Length: 169
Ligand code: FES
Image (cartoon, rainbow, N blue to C red; front, side, top):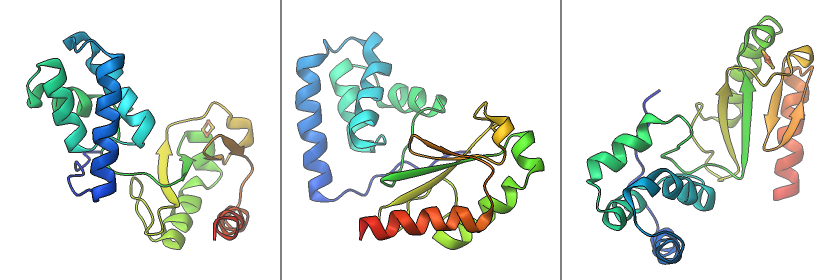
């Protein structure tokens, strides 16, 4: 799925990038071969790759912006939109599909009012889909950050969301 690159950042977001780039100048030598580790560093810190950070990486490495953007968009590991504090990953593998993962995903999309890849307005959740977690015996499987939930049904999934929401508000 093609992702739009986020260009619209708050002042705090821009300052955070400037600080990160300042740190990265100390950590990296600015070699073109460091492009992927630099992109990974930005994503680890910010959760995604904003346009401003990719332009800074182009400056640091001497690579063209097109090369940096092209490399980043080539790899599925990189995100270009902000993500929620909780990333909900719904498995769409065969075993989970047979056990109703599509209905589970539709329920979450309706409930949270976002499509996969988007962040909820409160900044709490992003839904993603994955091909298989390798836990097929637990189908249907959903992972929230690092916690795995198996044999899920729709009401249990919504209860998990509500529990997180009430903890966070
Ligand atoms: S198909 Fe869902 S965990 Fe393997």
